[in-house]
Image 1 (cartoon, one colour):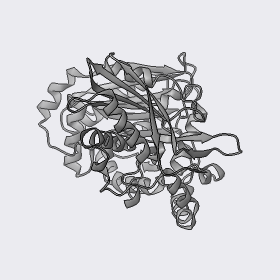
Image 2 (spheres, rainbow, N blue to C red):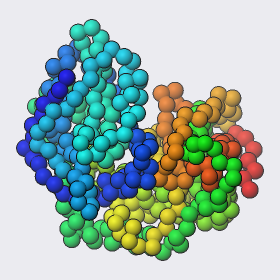
Image 3 (tube, rainbow, N blue to C red):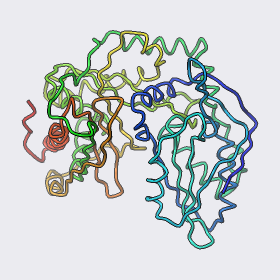
Image 4 (cartoon, helix red, strand yellow):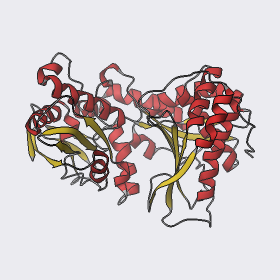
Length: 426
């Protein structure tokens, strides 16, 4: 079916900083840029027909300009082009929602022609049981998709009137114009200063003969013990679980590459300003996390907190400044994709040790190209396990090294929680 939408606004503008950052990553990854597609599954509350869901979808796309924005690629620099009307194709299917999501995210987008949202409605008889949404990363990031899904649920439950009381967030066009103005340029300059003092270097710069085919692989560790240990270590050191995992990543990368000072680029959500809290857009960008890792892990964590805050401040920057300047390019990223940090919590060492046999390691992805050489992704599971993956270019980090880093991360944090011996990290 086709869902027709109309909205009061239209126009063109330069890309926002977040869009520019992901556009650069897409260019370096194409034609494997379906890697950046992601999606959500919404269980439909109550009993709703396809026409009722279509009404809610039309209101959602009208409310959030990012979902009706395509790219104009005819000029020297891409522009974002916001449409005020159109028709969104929607698939009706009786397939399993997870299968549908995998299909919707499998193909790359035509960024000039495709709407940045793909939708399927899963039918159960005459009713719709699930809405499956696949997002183009040029339109939004994970937290932006969470806002869109939450709004869609409210539109299904209560209609458009349920969202009228909430002031609309600025559109990506509004944000682009602010970033190009004097206030935006001052913000970009302050961020640039945090990058410029660090020496330009790549963390993974030693070419390996032990490369795989295709070159890019992902190893994923699923570990209930790691989930418990991270929370216990965070409680002991009075910090967040995300900071613990970022510091552990830096320590392991530094020791694996033989660097006493390690640079990692954490993906920061950049929703710290009041006017960007509820925006559906790609705001997330890389910040610079730099740390002297030649010390024990407890001392490392004490330095990680201020280093993390500096990374947050550095992330809201103009990628064109970065391209023009002599900024560090470590090719080493960290992306905590959890929507919420579960928080510190003490845990008996025996419970952590008891969970260790449940750890599994898998290889869920391989492809030809990627925009960086090493990236850690963190996600949670419904069972409480922590899922940590390493996606790497095996020309610089072979598959055994990828597995070693994941196993060492588990061993390091389990030991720091008091539930095992320190691993040999040299």
